[in-house]
Image 1 (cartoon, one colour):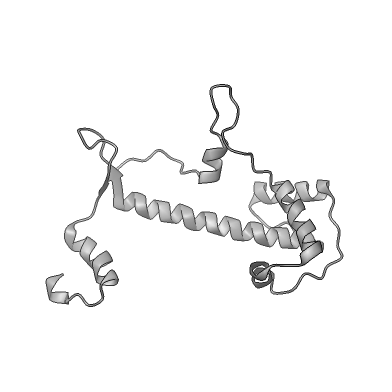
Image 2: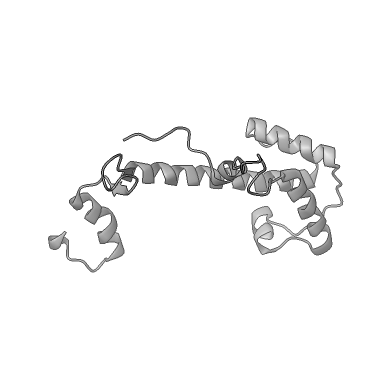
Length: 157
């Protein structure tokens, strides 16, 4: 089984798609713009329920953050994949969201790895490009059917 390393995330892949005039086919995601707008929303409306759950508190800070500080914080985080130490609560909130994003990305990568282990593309013939399951029937039944249909009698598996 062969796959073209490295696996790249969907957003990174989409960000590289261009038309014949070398213009991006999807909008470019600029983190600092996203977080700048999010901070404005927090100041007006506070945290939504997911943010309250993630941060474990309501929005109460009076801290400020400049565009340059925000960009610098994001760049450091992206470069090192580590939460930069800061006393600024707004930047800490941004860091917690980015930590969640990185964790979700890792989970997605692992899911892809598992699926790549289970499936492979047919390389030639009339079924070229079609995904094919790489497991024996008995393994497949024990992994999927048994869990999906708990009422299946062990003896028929």
